[in-house]
Length: 165
View 1 (cartoon, rainbow, N blue to C red):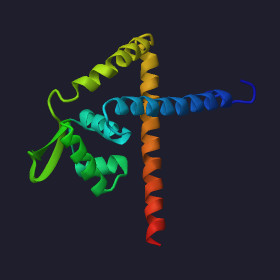
View 2 (view 1 turned 90 degrees about the vertical axis):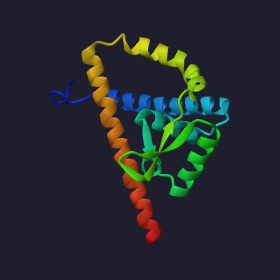
View 3 (view 1 turned 135 degrees about the vertical axis):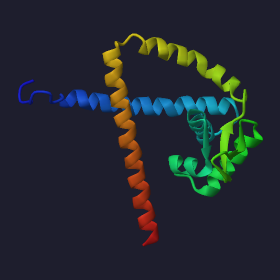
């Protein structure tokens, strides 16, 4: 604590957390890649399937914004997922000119079965923490997600500015 102000984090602990977050991110990619391969999907398609599931239904534009993929690449992705039977296109009830994509009922049951043991184990692990601990963890993850999302947006914006020069 010597040399630190009250409430100031230990720099080595901050570095350790940073390293662990990087490892968690890498492990997440490995998990996605392993599951995607098992189902004959590419990792991006599996992750977009998860984004669709989390949102309930999304537009192609929302997927493009979330992933940074071009509209053509998103259309091809949706076409692949539709051909594989995972998603369907539906009219937007708020705007009939707009089409949304949603998970077809029961279509991801086999994928969910593969993830179920991991989800059960992580739920058991997370349940060992107090509500107060989980509030801090949730706040940390939420802020981290927001920070990395805005950083990616800045990178994309910078890349598009360089292309236009």
